[in-house]
Image 1 (cartoon, rainbow, N blue to C red):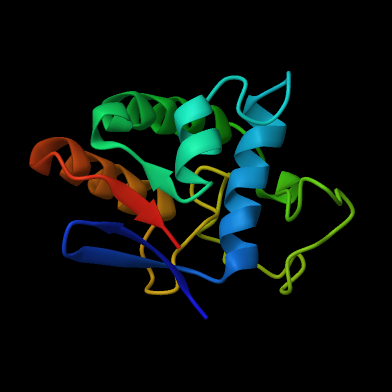
Image 2 (image 1 turned 180 degrees about the vertical axis):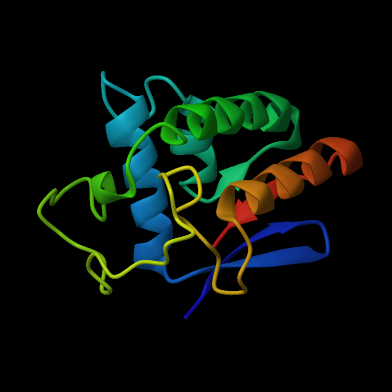
Length: 136
């Protein structure tokens, strides 16, 4: 079953639960040296847990943009599939498209959208419409 992110009547499909967990695991391991949610509390402790108030969406968007800038400099071979099991690998292993040049463009939704672009668009929608975001 696919996980999506919803703002008001709009839902954007992301992918499987393990894929979503891998995205946030990768962000945490490579961007938060002091542990999950220490640098990006709105993304990691609110949105990942399923709910982000629209009043926190602007800060979450800044966190997302910062994480994207960091991950843009990290090799795709450094993907983290599960923060609790760092030996876990994606189902496709290292067989990835040559278009993937960093962890900044590694994650693509089940509908073919760059995940950072999708999340940026949804968070901006949350800000503009003053509607909360839910992940699930």
